[in-house]
Length: 498
Image (tube, rainbow, N blue to C red; front, side):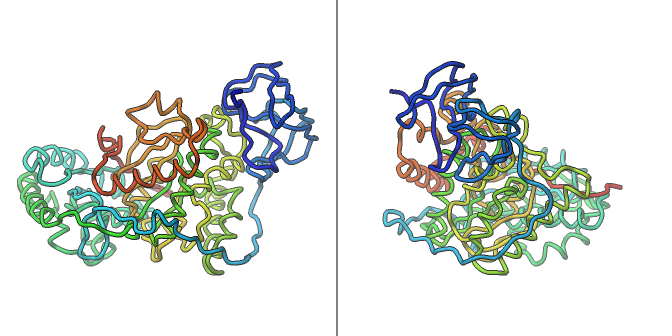
């Protein structure tokens, strides 16, 4: 008999439909007959018991909101009869330290073939990046990208310009935030060489930016002010030629998996994201954590409602307090603009079966597995310690992926139940939550977590994904965003533009 429902936790009062269920259809679930009182769309919830008005509705073993009306067993549960429990700023209490994770024996000696940089970091690509200090030179950067790839074809893993619309007319924190993100990109180990391209009169001119950037290796980072030269293309290509020669001094070598830094991101979640793709990433996160690697979880608004589960795993009281500040500062950002803190999930999320922010967050944070939270980062900051780090930032796909790259992620694991072609400057490994999406969007999706619903065990699927990650890191595989050229950045803005 084909399973039509899945229940995540024994405590749950709902199950999720694995296929559309018609009104009046009788389902055999948990050795009982269950009659559907409504048509239940694919991925949506059905009540497994009668639920009184005002009572909590339980999924993932946690409340995802309360019932707006009396709900009968077999009814469709969604935004029409469920409302969030969340409101305002909460008080949190520091608890016990989390357990240390053990390394699975089969992954104990995991390695990849990467590029070891002079600063000890590892790159998984040997690219040249062109980073504009200001949007005014975006087209110049893209023309240089095209010309340089034609001239130096095959000598590196590619030459890429990362354009943006920031860098001028910004004030205070916004200006500094742009500088920090650009600093993180310039320092990224996937870039063997970087050309920093300036106009010359922007707020973020080199005299202003270089003190923020700090000391750099002149063999690796070159600067050009386009207003100061007669032919910016000729001057820039000469500098890029020097960077290409420097990049060619690096060769792949065997490195321990502890040299990896992975970022985690949700994009267009559905009801199965928290059942397949996100907990699958959580298993990989825990393997990497045990191996001494670094992982980064962002999308702070999608921690709301599940933040206490992360706080319980803070490695010490300071990290706990930093996590509290991370959450409360982002809530204050919402209220500063007179916005509802819990105005989420998105229309696409709702269509996919997610009804409240708690439900979305409980699914989203599973990407962090069970690893201790070892650090909390601001925009553009790189982790100071290995293990799981939380990164300040919104849930917007382009902004959060840029944020992760600037923090040093060499690969981003991007889970999705709806699909998204977007890609960041680093390999952006798209993981579908369901097989239907994987089959429909082969040119978007790299890995199918929907195999879990089709019968493959979590353990085998996690092993396959971990091996695939090592292959990507070693250059044996390219992600779809690399194959199709989806490589973009977007910088978070919060303030006045002159």
